[in-house]
Image (cartoon, rainbow, N blue to C red; front, side, top):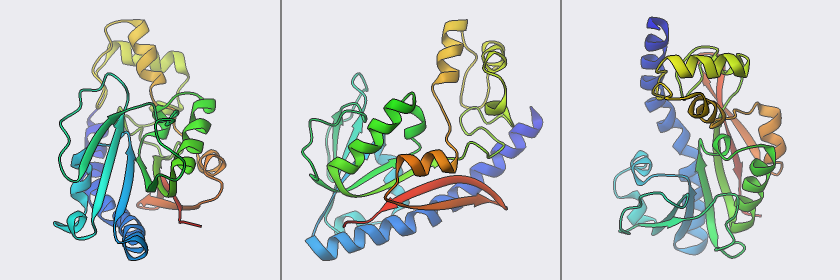
Length: 226
C-alpha cells in the first residue's frame, strides 16, 4: 500500500496543476458565451460549489455567470446563494429543464458513476438536450491507478476479486465495506470508460486527453454552440 500512497500523493499534487490547465477551455467557452449573450447560464451535473474555486477570483461575477448545481434526490443541499442555485434531479432525467435552457452543461467525473451503458447514454443525451454547449470530463479506464480507491490496477482485476478486496481493506477514498452487499455496490459505483466508449457517448464533440507524464489520465468532451 506504500506505493499506492506515494502515487496518490503525486497524483493529488499533479491534479491541482491539471485542474488549472483543464479550466482553460472552459474559461474560453464562458468568455465566448458572455460575448454573445452578456451573461452565462451553466448547469453543473453532480457538482459542488467548491469546484468553481478553480476559476480566477471575481471571474464569475465579471462574466455574469449563474450556476445551477444538480445532485441526486436525497442529497443534503445548501441554501441558494449567488451565483449558485441547488437542485435535486437525476442527471439521466433532466425533464425539469426545457431544451437548450442553459448556455453550458458541465460535468466533472460524473458519467462513470451514473450506472450501466444505457444510463450513460441517457446522461449524455440529456446534457446535449438541455444546453447549447457542454464540457464533460471523465477518468480513463486504461490509466493504471484507479482514481476512486487510489489503488494501482484495481479496476483491471476480476470483479469478484475487487469485491473481496473492498470487503477486507479500506482503499483510498473508500472505507472498508461492512458487508458483501456493500462491497458490490461500492465496486459497481464507478464504471470507467476508455476513449472509444467516451467518444461514442459524446459523438459531436472534440475530445481532449489529459496526461500524467506520458500516460492518458482522463478525457474531456467539449461541444461548442452550433
